Length: 197
Image (tube, rainbow, N blue to C red; front, top):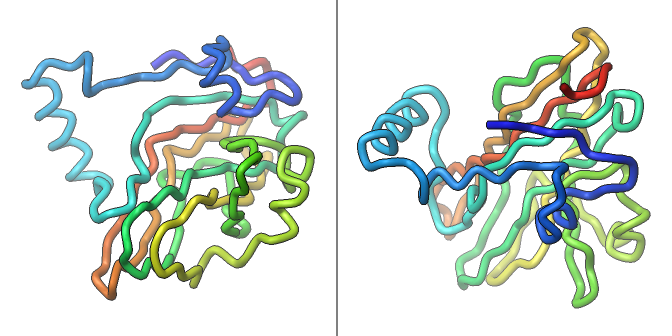
């Protein structure tokens, strides 16, 4: 997967919508042959849990890279889009294979009709989500009875222990009407002291 850098002020969802070169979207489901897809599924299932349950955390797969100078303290957003009628409770969020990146906190930020959908920004993401940010709630323990239109915002810190830090996504543990599930995001992140080359 090729990854190219984000520029100052570029948020990931805007980059996706405008096909900017800041990210490359990898649609494995449409390009992989059946044999390769099975092999990939087996590899993923033996190393990191695949998404289970009614909340779709893994709709797209892509990677991004950014400068440690610009985004050493970052907001990493995951769409929380659920249209069902079950009671959803987020019980834990954990980073997948973090190297030089720490997960500091998790919030749920509700969207309104005019909200920018933020995937990555400086922390806190108040430039794009000023009004929405005021209504954020703690992510762990977040409970909703029915539909959700929000972003699960993870606060990440670049530790500086490596010139190139990385994160292979997030595991989101939750329940739906008391049944336990795990959602796996497929967005990777690299934070580079250099130029993300």
